[in-house]
Length: 152
Image (cartoon, rainbow, N blue to C red):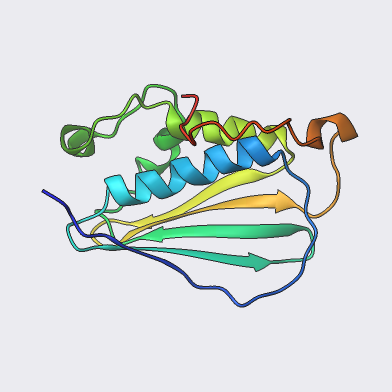
């Protein structure tokens, strides 16, 4: 049965430069959006928004799912961890978020989380506005668009 999740982008256009690996950032965003859909409630919503501060571009993925308790929030970045009752409702290896976190940190950024049980979760990535790695880490890969599937 389809759950009819509404996905929307809410952001005002702005121009900003940031540094990232195009393939990896696509994998991270795909994973975060897929999780927001997978762990949402029927007829829920996922909102993607983009903001900036002095150092980073911030991409937020907010859902209206079950939420994650304060006690469980640190566990979501542990490998092979699927949280209690959530694990019974959706299939997953427990690798998506740890791998996504590692990829973003490799690019000099981070993934963060705020969540309230019964209300939903907001995950966001922070992508540096300045180059923090050697230039070869930012080179575009030759037409490596693939199928958009995660390597996880």
